[in-house]
Length: 233
Image (cartoon, rainbow, N blue to C red; front, top):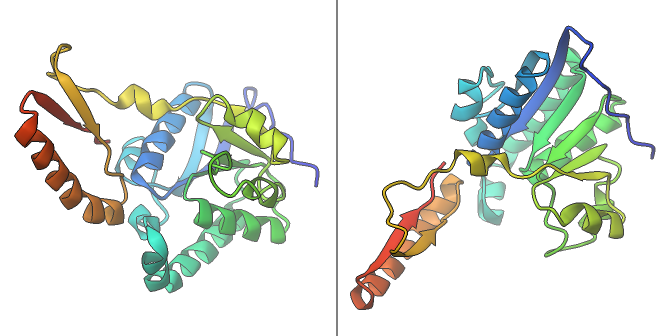
């Protein structure tokens, strides 16, 4: 399948862009993308996002938290809602006909949306921002998404070469804009620091924070000079 070419929108007055992010980390990436695009073109923006993307001017089609699931139990419990959101998203995109669709992470949901669009003849470019970690888990996923995406925007520099080797879609390294927004304050450079990264989904935080707290308390008992840094978005 020949991927749709990514047009040059610099000469167009207004560009219709649909951007979807179903997780907190993706929401930060999406907000950054909106801001960068607005520096270059006039946007007719639509999509799904949370606080950061809404703050950047997006009116979300539905609450992004509906997509923030983790593990089989979460998926099974919320499956009817997730499938409804897939259909709603596909219908909306087909109706509004954006010039480009950007789906950020949320791999299962994004794949279903992309599949639904392709099945219904949607011909505009569909991009996946943050590709699947085919270099570490289930490399066959690279070939499975060839027919779904016209390009993958990678956040790690080695991913384009891996995606090509595994027969995946066109892939371009763009970096991780969320890193520009993370600030660690009031930490002495001489301190011994341990960074805590429990995740961004509600399910991850519910499962991980109590365990992190227990581990921190145990480490602090024998290493009182350690300083713990919790990364938030």
